[in-house]
Length: 598
Image (cartoon, rainbow, N blue to C red; front, side, top):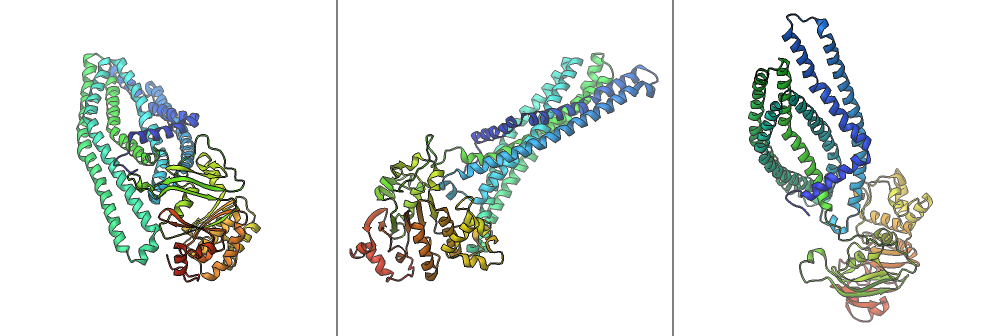
């Protein structure tokens, strides 16, 4: 997904997204671009014409009184004031255009992120994603400001100046265009080279932020292993890399681009003054033309001097925003079919039909994790999944949740292929409790209520009681209004699991998936929660992953997995008498509730 430079396709997508905001607010966009342009003409390009007329009066009369030039002074002040009014109007509308545009782009960025598949997040740093999404939104403001205040407000006034100079003499305009053309030919190759250096600088900055986020997110691990120095060394490496690429891009701009442009700017102003004097004499024009020609030459060449800065701003904003759109050029591995329908669960029967599946890291090999895997789970059946680590337990639940799609075969729920139903409706019908649940940095009430939109307070507390977490919550100073910290770090792992179980209890979905849902609990707490879980499982199709076999021995069915294959299938009583893998696992645990980390 990461490349050395942002692709042109990503840049085009950014432009399309930004252009959509201008189309959505056409009045704001039109006024934002037109009014500053008119203001620039009135405050910058009209005054030289008025001053030229005053110079002509002095050239034609021995004595010029204040009364003779009063009307010109009033016109000068009036047009300048009008230009300032136009600028204020333009600024008023551009503020609204940018605010609304950033609002829409923020929502769009969030929607794109949450719609990505599971693999997208396992391959990405959270910090990098946040940086890129933020840059995508904020650079709309930067891009729009540059476009409105540096591009449009220069292009049209320059065209106005070209017309005025053409009216004096076409040769004046032609000479100016030739000068600008020579400057472009000299600067363009240098600008292109700098563009590549800027892309590398942005890439290094993203890696630097990503590493910082990764270190902070895992600060408990860093401290427990006393690796602060090691993490600092790695971060210093990324900072050094960014600094080097930042300096390389800056030096190239300063020593190559600016060195090439500076003499052209000085030369063009000198040449502009010489040409103004020459054209006045050669074409027998009025003396005031010198003022107009030099003023326009100076202004236009100054604009060209700023072109490299304007280009730098546009280039930087496009590259920064393009780093976000680059991630979405390829369709997600898991996406809704065009004709996807809502899942309708009646009995909750789950079937795996001749599944072949390999993880993304196996895609370039012939190796598969599951091969011709079939499994039929009746509606309402409570099924335990056990076996050694890496046997396939979590893979099966990930496929049911459609975090991945099988390469061959199908998975159906009540006869409906889950690839032909919407992902939202599929997961709405599944209550999932992961082994390591993470909570939102919100209140305990909000975290539990996340399982059911519009849940009443009584329902939330009842779910908490069944999950054996209510007493702990009410013992806190703020009770259910207690903030749990980022990812739930303010409470223990066992408490987080109980919150996650309460959330699942509240959701009341017809299919239940528990992935080591009680692994962080002590034996006494687990006994209490088992009552809630048994209540939760009533009438629901349940998939329960457990290393602690005592927690699943009362289920309707136990499936033993090893290396992606079903090696045993039956009830606890049936399996314990077969002297197979399940019996070995059971004996290893000595029949107690102690997790020996099989």
